[in-house]
Length: 188
Image 1 (cartoon, one colour):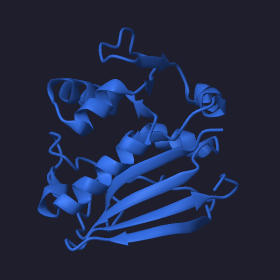
Image 2: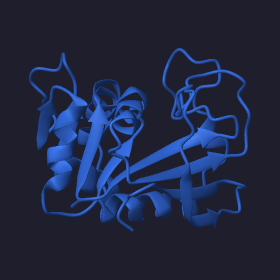
Image 3: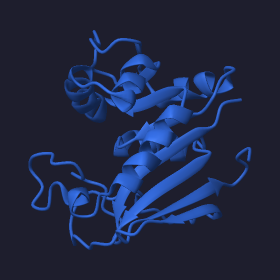
């Protein structure tokens, strides 16, 4: 069984919206105030470890519009690895090695296949659906030392509590901290 890893950039107040310069948010591009070569190396290692990428349609369209035009080890891996996008509207994906799934229930079948980790980035709506169906094995939260006060948050409001198990912590000189958490019942 493959591990499904949700890897996100988040602020101290839990905002994940517009980290890289997306239009429409008053604080767009907030990660760039804190990025370092050490963090870029961490993200490269994470992508190199993954064997597949799982995305929601909005994040997929942003990535598909950017990564095919780039080169280097990170872009080569992103462009070459299998990609799954959960969408009810995407019909003909142009980014190579992309499979469209119509709902989150199909993700369980991909997890049951042999292979390495499946990495999820961005894709807030998808992540919340994966959580609802108990499909997330690990959260890797790259927490940036900034409070935005507004914006879409990773975790939805819910009356339920979700206990997590701290698996790893990594601190960077920029003040950014990566906290990795296993979910209840996830394979270690």
